[in-house]
Image (cartoon, rainbow over all chains, first blue to last red; front, side, top):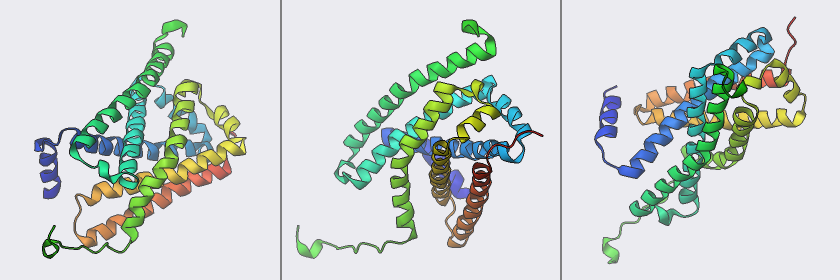
Length: 139
Length: 128
């Protein structure tokens, strides 16, 4: 447990800039997605094991709180994918790109691509929440 | 560089961790179209407000979509559990504890994949 505390203090104090930000975001988005995936496998399995409970699970997913969580989940899946491609490409194909300046600019590109993919998706999901949960846009 | 100052390091033999390291990268290449396609369809095009038991039954009536979901279950969850293992290994250092961690996560993976797999094979049951 002491090593956990040391690591957490290290994450805050270390100034690794883009490289450290992408490392932390990759972990947070990966763990978040894995947690959701576990719940999602179990809730979908209700259709076979307890089909009468499935609509209750879906009702929970339709709430505004889970809708906001869904928008965060889509960010996680997009960032983890784009950043994963970056890491896999440099590891397997172009290891000469593992220099600090090249890593910094590639992390900035990764974040830009993620935002370009995420913003329209987030807009559509926000529209759906407002339409179905608040009766806006004729919902 | 002077030859006497150069230290050569032997490339380590590939072991289980080498396979796991490669697995994370190769499975990721397959997961990008699979997961992004799934998210685009279910979260953005269809949306959770239009998903219910009938929707799942209709989707799973197609063997193609069931195969798609089987691939997702197989690749995404194994990638996720190995990712959890990699993160926890940064905090758990003793070889004995790491061994427990490996077996514990393997058991977790087997149980969840079995539940999901049974549901995928059994399909949607009608409410009595």
